[in-house]
Length: 147
Image: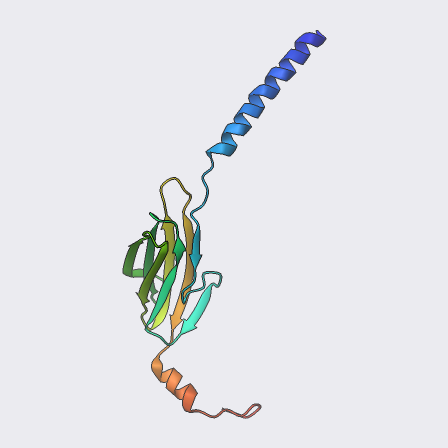
């Protein structure tokens, strides 16, 4: 009885270890991307007065970079306004200027390469009107004073 129980235990351990080893080797690595341009995908929202931002960085040759820009209506609905696709070449570098509308611009970034998990990020860029910039530059504000 002990031998049969021990044999079943050994058989069970072999089956379990074989499936664990297979599951670990089936996972793909994520696409390696380094973003060095104007946008910081670590932040949820950033502001600018510029009409464009440049998204640049490094990735492996053959990686496809997809960038989609949406504007957000007052009701919160997203409308796609621009769509960019860049194929990373021998230099392992990419760069794309992204146009921005006045107001909130939601930017989705995705890097894909066959055999790898996708790298994805997003950020909302709030483009302010140039009139606000001019007013701020030409105004004098005294701490503690009334506006």
